[in-house]
Every structure is written in C-alpha cells, then in structure tokens.
Length: 148
Image 1 (cartoon, rainbow, N blue to C red):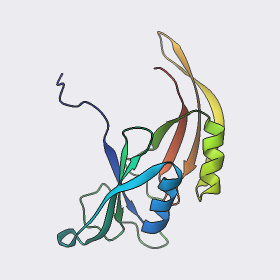
Image 2 (tube, rainbow, N blue to C red):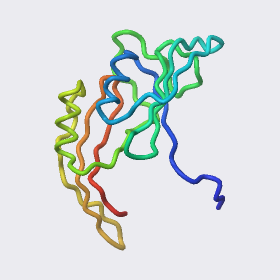
Image 3 (cartoon, rainbow, N blue to C red):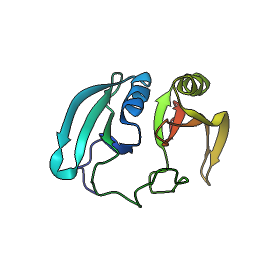
C-alpha cells in the first residue's frame, strides 16, 4: 500500500448558479483563496475555497466549463441525473443546527437529524447526521463527530 496519499484536498463541482453556490459554501465557513479562468476549457470563472476551521477545499467551476466529467451535461429543466458523487460530508458538532442553518441559507431539506446504528460482525457504531441538497444540487451530509 502506497503512503503517497496523505489526506483529502478538495472536491470539484460545476455550479448551475455560480454566485449562489459560492455564497452558500461561504455560509458553511469556506472562503475563496484563489480564483481563475481558463479560456481553453471555456472556463470563465473558477474558485478554490478553503474551510477556515480545517484543511478542506472545494473547487467551484461555472456551468460552461468544458472539463472531463462523469455522466452527461444537465440541460435546462432536466430532472435529476444520478452520477458517481453520492454526497459531500462535513463533520459537525450539532447535525440538527447545521441542517437548519443550511436550510436558512438556501439548501433544500433531504433528511432532518437522525441517529443510525451502523453494524458489522465486529461492532456497531452509532452515528447522528442530517442531509440537505445544496442550492446547486449536491447532497451534503452533516455528521456529528464519530470514531469508526
């Protein structure tokens, strides 16, 4: 097993509404640390955002970006198209509070706080979480601190 991978850096999303998506992630304690454009990829706006509390980044690109991606491009009015990104997960102190704050800032409800028992043959781990759809459509999980 290689020791080359030493942590999580970022995930990238293509935002249907770039400004609204950036503003939403700002409410989750992210700040823009770099912005750029790449005309050769039809990319007018792209930002790297970093969470102020921990070393986690999000790359947000405008909807016209011509980058390799999974699935097909969503057309105006298209229903949800499932792809490989299942959800984005952030550790939180209070899943209910994170859920409520996200809704107040433009997210759509998916699953209010619930407690689940994740069981395997060796042990059971109890988790408390909540889930929302961001204004851009990503599923975001707020997971109360747990040791797996």
